[in-house]
Image 1 (tube, rainbow, N blue to C red):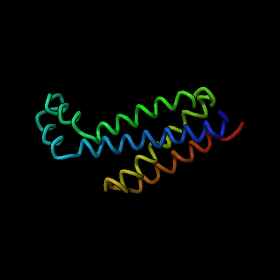
Image 2: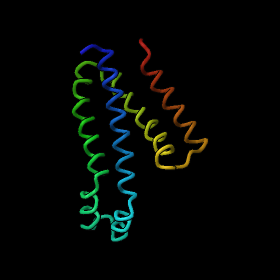
Image 3: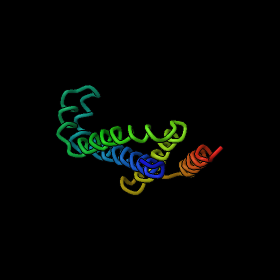
Image 4: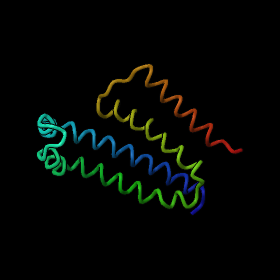
Length: 127
């Protein structure tokens, strides 16, 4: 696996993780799961409802695929290069939350996102 391919695969893994977060949030926002949560965070009904949700299963599948695909990334990229890329997942997840889930955006969130991107860029510069 070439390093550009490994870098592309790393970014794909980050996208999968962001997709997982969005699916899990959407699944947990369903009326059935919100009602089950009213019974308590550790109610059996909550977990039964969650395990019946295709969005929850989709999110877990995305997480699993991301972990499996991350292994070859670590075989080819230095961890000091690969791991900072995971911070981009915060950016993608925040943007997806706004665009797909109707979550709010503030100046603080935008500044935080810009700082994360700047940090990843600085860490990715060649020495």
